[in-house]
Length: 64
Image 1: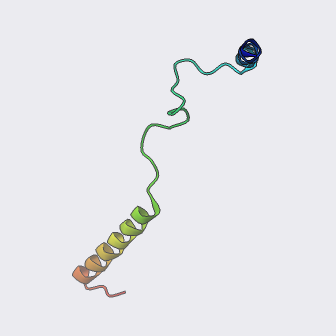
Image 2: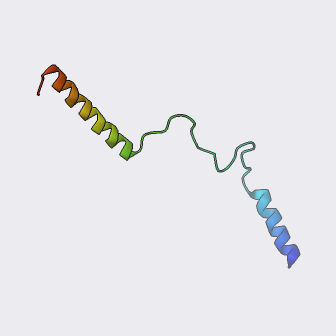
Image 3: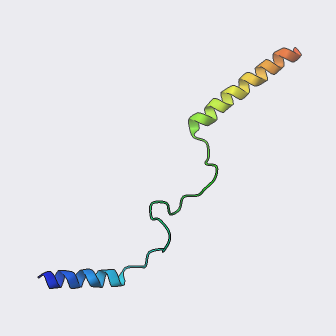
């Protein structure tokens, strides 16, 4: 029984696709560099930009 299981495991490993050497499976596909902003960050930046526009309009006397 053990011999049969061992042989099955050996056959399964032999037919399995070869893994990428030198690449960590957990990190495969991760792209280095800046990541896109989260939705809450985009909303926060938009709010700050609106406040800056309002302040600039007040300083120049433009209320439109």
